Length: 382
Image (tube, rainbow, N blue to C red):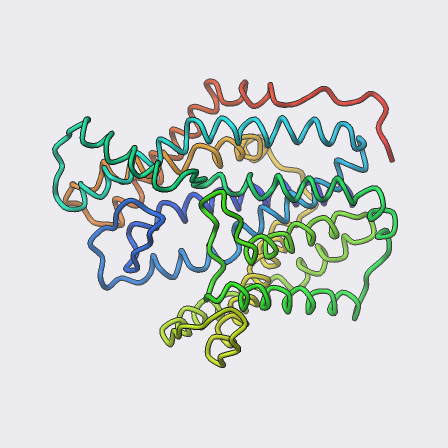
């Protein structure tokens, strides 16, 4: 069963990485305008991109925190605390620092450029562009863009390392039947409470170094869920997700239609203001998140080993996470002045950005990431 669990992680990582790319490729083509993207295309009626973004956004980062929590336990138990610290510093800390210095400024520079092109000003003035972009950086020091995941993860890994020595031995217990159901119910209630604390319909990703405590605790829940499911006696949750995957998928589809509809009855609330419509919407959103995560996990939980292509996708997924967002923004801006259907623009932006991600990984990304892997200790811990 241990191998099955590793294959499940591999497949979940690949699916999550690709869905995240679809999410980013879809954002500017929504009817809804979002401040996290430099421009918006002229789409005022086709809601399909909005529904797709809403459903992917509802669980995709939760899946990544779930994965990292799962792997943290496996790595800590197998190699010990010293290797755990060194490996996480190299795999998380170094890319985070480089990304802050290189990727985040590039993304910020794209914002004034995209805004100008949206208004029809497709002429290029490097001096004005640099001036506007520098002001944007100064006004938002220091933004994280997509690297907020690594920022939060650094806190969770530090907290895990601190408590693992005392916490892990007592959690090697079997969870079955009603106890599993009670745990998932508690998880759902905790997620709803985070929404009520956040005072919004969805948990918004933090984009600066200022901690947003509602989202911080929210994502910690999924990191902790992954860590709990990683323990040897608790592969039961993967089997449960596999057994009920079609029911979970059906629930995800229904809630994926109901939850956006509930947003049309949007009301303004304050934290912990128990307004009925808001509570109903956040309860549905929390259930959607858990259904979606469990459904995807259930469908990828298979005993067969990944093939060569699938293994390559697994190894490239971290590189895709680091590089895809700035690339897809760049291609979307370049496609903005073209008079072609939005679906074609979406497909071109997705294909070109993924193509460059995969090509750069093959040429040099693989070698760069391999330097961030410390040598494993000869004697492993059990």
